[in-house]
Length: 298
Length: 307
Image (cartoon, rainbow over the protein chains, first blue to last red):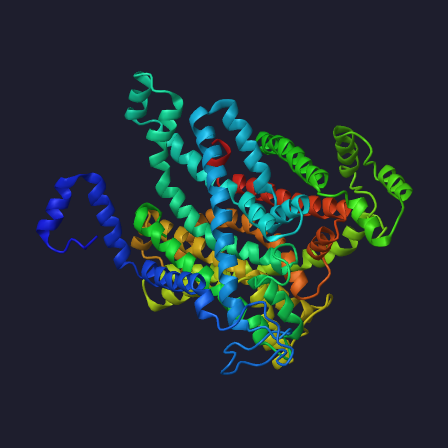
């Protein structure tokens, strides 16, 4: 979509209907927001790098080279090699796939469960709201990483379970955002009208209430991806997530830290990768919030 | 006020029951009985399995086990550690001090740094000072603490040799872990302080204070901060949970003693009595801190009580 540059295009867009102008307005604000631009740009570069890891990486991330253990950065190995002689740049590139996938899947889990619980609580109210609210209170009572660790304890160590664990720990954020939005949206006249003509509850929830909660949940989801990636990497760092020989950033850092004094690059590169991904999503998420919901602007 | 505190305490009961239920069920879901995997490693017989299952009460029905667990847990008794063969209560008591020391030190750092950065950014809104402060805060929320911890160890212990890289006990050994942990929380406190102070600075009573000729310092610290702090206190309470969770990682990075390290180790070893004890104690600490924050809140802002 091109930018409405002249007054006439703006006027045309305005007559074309509210949704279109709003979309255009949001896109225009996004193009002008430094956080969205820098964060989004960085994120695109990172996503492209991980998607094309098989092209960009000169080595197989699992290939061991006994001739070149903990080698310093060189022309052949720009980031050096790890204690088993595996090329660090290749491992960092492939590791991006794991971290980004973990971010996406765990946030998807939080989103789906949180939106469902939030809509049920907000729409039905009463005892449903009470029961769901208490359940969310219990989840929120666990300090940060501990709920994810407890989930890992129940399900067993591993990358898939780490995604589920991080996903569960994010449910309250989405439940609360959704519930609040549904509570105010269901006061709208069109909801009452839909109910008056006998629309089934499923239709009211799906067609009339769901569109209202998309924007706030997109913001929460974007801001959550960074935390989710850090949580996932922390679990792997603690030995509770991805297992060797997976090229997972948190795990690579844990393996590299023993050699901190002799081969600092082993823990530096994967840490920097996590930092850049998380900073990019945070910048983008903050920007998106400013653009989509100027009321919340800090 | 008394009824507010009592009401707040009553809400706590179902939450505490829920927490204990989740912590207990996690053990019940554990794939492959913990005892089986323990004996598979040490090479025990079927009779050993039977004996140990009885000893830990695992042959009882779910609700009976939960009841026993709950009635003992309220007395602080979590049974014997499966691996270390010592009472969980004693192990937690031994390690608790180190974690309290770490989280309190980190809390002080995060409050000082967070409020400082937030206030400076708000007062100098839109200038390069604001941008720099918010950039520092962005770095703080984006850095995984296991990485920032290693960077600090690399710089201050390995290269400069100023501070110890690992260990528990003594002020010097506390500095790096506390800064690592505190910085991540400071970033969030800074953001909240900035936005809440900006909000308050735009209000009429602040304009009145300025109009009657009060100096900037008095207006900001004497008038505006009082109200801005109400929001900040809540965030500090919530950040305490982040600190307790982060302590797990920081204690591992710095090879410190503490409940977090104990918990992570227990999960890796499927030592369920130890996991139950450490997770419950940490969660209870977090719940109590938030309770305290809520009550303080009620004192600071009487409007909350009647809401």
